[in-house]
Image (cartoon, rainbow, N blue to C red; front, side, top):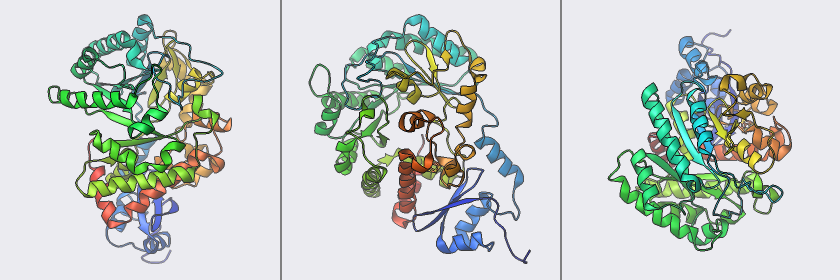
Length: 469
Ligand code: SF4
């Protein structure tokens, strides 16, 4: 070996921004200029901050801090797995909205109209508390969960009592269209610290076109009204966190990224989150979809609008960019918030247990392929013995299952769920070389890294990365 050569340890690389992005098995990533990448790959010393990041990220075999690298690896591969912490409960199949892209409705299998009964709700809470030791998040979904508010209230109280008795950390959120909220329900959510997550697809015309109410009238007007009431109430309830909203991006949205961002800001929502259309339910029929390139162009314009507003002092930020950059600059392990079964479980109104909310939505639209068991008759230990459960846990690490991912530098930050693969490609593992979701993720990561390589927007992105949450 030549003197002064500093051989790199294992890494993956791809073109990104104005250089190359490299990542490794411990989940660390560094954006390098072309010149620095040539030096690094050629075993020569990289000067300055990029060199320091390579050393701290276990990229250099010289002076490799093996205990720190092993700790990162152990964390990345869930060596201390405490069981799933996110429990997504569908309280009802019913809904008062008729969204054009509804994931739980299907012309071939209309929603059953079932509500989760009280005894089943108790069973789900008990199942969740018996499923490991992770801090717990109980997220209420639907249909529209406010249509079964009595059961929501019951589950919050039962979970609170168990958490207090067992010393468990517990959080709540409810995903609601807000249109059935009233003062009494809002007071309960505020008192119990149940974070409100809603949908906002943009300005009124766009939102109402995509999210009409069954009874008519403007759903946007009601969202605006209740977001205002929540903001006013938060001063009295410090534990009542700021509400969040997600914008589902359809073909109609593509022309209006700036207007959508501006609407979030106007309604006091600092966090912007975009949801690409999933191929479930009504959205599976086509007509509302778009290519990965079209989504990427939309995303780039929206991100640029947020970077511009943030540079002028606005607190607005984009959730995906914040998470990605915080992993990049913070050096912490990627956050596996969406790992099926490993981090999250979902429950249908009948108590069926699914590895993810996508799998539960697929079942609600008529295909129960991913159902693992029932909260009343199974426990996590028995579910984990199922071959399907083991395949789902393996699917959390795509570098081990997909040849394309095994070579991709984004793999520590990325995952396409088996439910998506199954719905879009008819295969549990999917084929990433032809996957629309893989192409979309690559384009989004590339856009964020491109902005990260520009000094002005990098400053803003680093500021977002430091935000809590
Ligand atoms: S899904 Fe695509 S972008 Fe994600 S890690 Fe695999 S190859 Fe890379």
